[in-house]
Image (tube, rainbow, N blue to C red; front, side):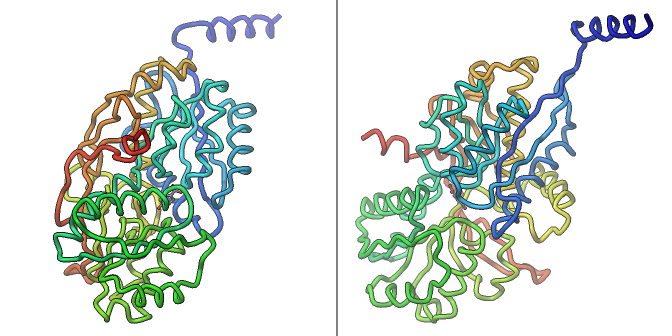
Length: 391
Ligand code: PHB
């Protein structure tokens, strides 16, 4: 009898309006292996969001379920994402460091009734893979385009491009070349490097032989970027005066201590620098550094994740915690807020983030630490890659 009464009582409570649900968010990223630090930054950004905003949205409490996909591995990402939807019953998918991992999961979103908030993967076409994709990171089109004018204005007329041979690399190459040629510059050679490349010395020789005054490069942040910049320094290219232009992936803050003097003066363009001077960023950096443990490990995936959680919280608010992917995505179209990186908006048409892109140079602070110093702002940049793809 007692059991029956308590069961009835529990059921009554469950049907009541005040019943608080746990909303599960599945986050896919590299949490082990060579890119583990990038995944750790996803988690630090998410934890920083909870530290500053709490875990509750209305009556609903957010629970994050992490799944490890150590590198670009579409089959594994698909399996993990499917498991999150079907078994874990997540209402939201998020994370996705590598483009192929986001692309592999996108076709499941509509049937699963699950929005995907991309916190890093940077190929323009990802938002076209499903109407349920929203992105809070950047695209390589967005970051590379303003840099071409900077190079040309700095007197460079001949450049060689070197990019990782997959989505964001191909986009970066096309973006830089398109903008540089528009400025009257010439790309003398374009090299695509396999994602597995670890020895960059032979490529440095090709740069020397090309007759270019400068190089433009994109690689995914992690061990490849550190090795590339080291090779640029160690093989004498830097000393020979071959200028370096890259997206900010190449000088992420967590790589700067290992680069040391070799990083000094490197010119990059990006959506976020840990040194960004604003009240919002100060609060974010403090919370995210606490979350990550070692402050020197903080890097850009944390801000994509922090803002991604902001978007997910808005989606939960708009749907009252009910699973309704279409309504959730609709609710964040046109959403504007002040991110730690500066003012941002989710473009209502593309569902990609409009944001400032900053020109930066690696400098050494009075405290002896290396940092990306913002020196110029290109305001309110959309994604030129989407318009280009339609042409
Ligand atoms: C990507 O795979 O889209 C990607 C990964 C790492 C980056 C940028 C883009 O730094």
